[in-house]
Image 1: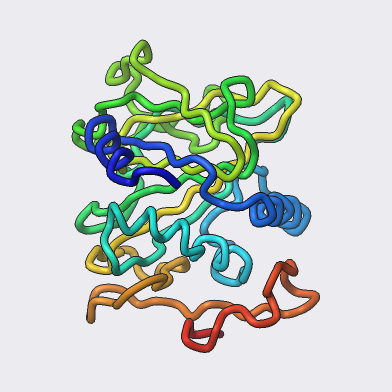
Image 2: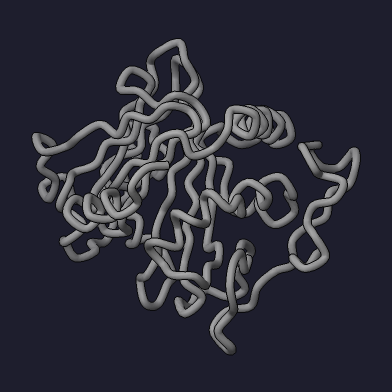
Length: 265
């Protein structure tokens, strides 16, 4: 996976970092199949809107975001006691994939303190032509600004940061091969263009918090303890769902996942 300290140094300087070849091709293929399964199961949702409210009862989703390779990266940023705050597939279909307007993630989140890191897993190759994520390096030092409603053009979040605060000339494309991961700060200004290509562009956002960070909106339907120890009195964590044939998507090891030590529904 390369020199972890190099990526952390880039993150501290620019607000984001890239890790190549994190997950194996077989698991990435399962994630891609999972997106197709979710879209078929939730036809009322846009493919860009497979939100955290779906995670609670989905064993594969929990298996994916608790993969040790992802948690090892998260640990470098939030420490050894790691919980899930939220996760969201943004699957931009070919031809009409919606943009994500410039925004700061932390402005949306009920977290105290704002100690959180996002891992963005490329399920497909994420390229400029299919609407890869773009970031404005250095803007992690900006304070969080309230997002403004934006409905003039269909967009994933229906909101954006005040455009006068964004210097688009400084934006860079975050290009990833499937199985690669980018990491970004909750304050960094980022977004993505529409997908007008013939290729789907799917990424999975995973928001990891240290167990000392409080989720202030309760109840919260996506809080899972993933590694280490909980802090008493801070958050209530859910039990991981057990695979049920015919109800959930089958995946490698589904019959024995999670282990009894993980805690299950």
